[in-house]
Length: 327
Image (cartoon, rainbow, N blue to C red; front, side, top):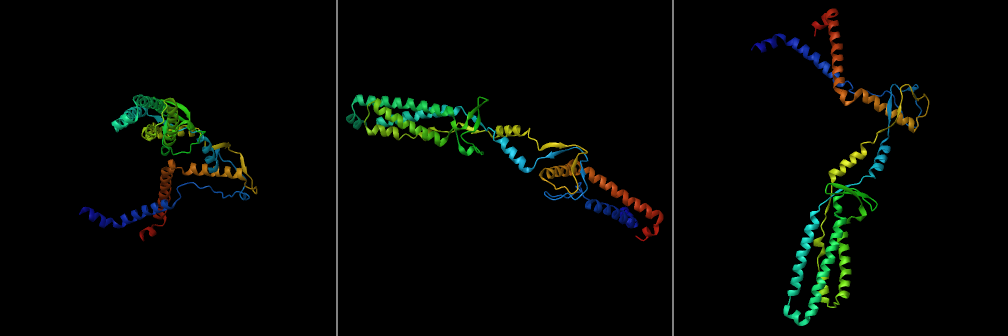
């Protein structure tokens, strides 16, 4: 109740104080927050203002086109990182041995009586030796392929050419390789198929095999099952290396010293002068209205407007009090 009574008795004063601060807030809100470069200029047009002298030291900033071109040039040297999973080869070799033996046994146990009547014992021994030879050759090929590395194209989100270099991390040690020597999964499969056909030709001559049935056995083996990627794209490591390459990149090129003439009145603003003027504008506005100073600017504006209106109030209070009485 006392609060309501106080507000009722002092409502006029409360209204005036509220109006006082509302006026300050509105004025401060309408004031600009950042410094503005007072000169207007265009490339290829004459400089219409007085001769401009550099008011302070400032860097000359590169154009966006320069920045883009230089970054592209730097990133051409970017070598992506891949991690090698050494367990993939071991798993696939074990899988190849197990499945191959099962297929061989299934083949020789198929229609046993028919096979015994169709092939002599010596022929069957040659067939067995042929399968052992084929297995040994294909096992070595798998080792060779996995040593070079197998990667999925979909894992790499950058354009890599045959001339590109990459880093492969093996046992926490990064080694540089030529990207063209790394197999993509389909390439590894095609290579294995081509080599298997060469080995089948060797088997025909080496073991004097003419039977299409056993040759078809080798041709029908599904080698794609034994080709799995053992290299994975290390995005985190690659991004870290990318930032390292860009860490020394500078957005500026050269300096303009305080007191140095920038452009004279009537002089045409060429490309270089335009770049310097833009650099001065950026630096000038940054110094006056940078984000780290916006709070200070706001506080300063508030204090300035408060002082100005308060001085006006004091003037009216002492010399024009009748105005205040009528408010």
